[in-house]
Length: 121
Image (cartoon, rainbow, N blue to C red):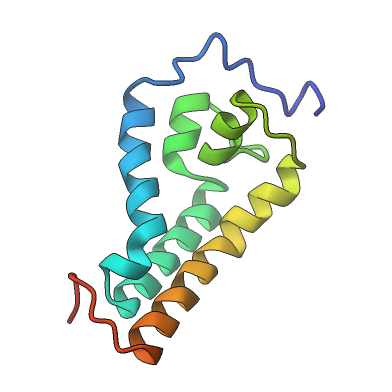
């Protein structure tokens, strides 16, 4: 990890307001295939991609760490507990693949298995 991509998280408040705003959103997003209708998830994926296109990253990550360079919420906390990975590849996966994995899971479970989520049309 180069110095330009490294962030001094020791000086940042890792568990401040933005962490606590981010955490429930991350949990809900990752469980959304069980919680929400796949059409609502598709709309959310579109909004997420629009955010990435306009802001070049997640607004909460940018606010908390004042950067978006190869950073995700996951990156900071997984690195803090010892995981090592290529930040750039991980960020690209989380931005452009993971949302579609969640959507695909929702479609398979809801349409394929007939599961009706609590938040449905």
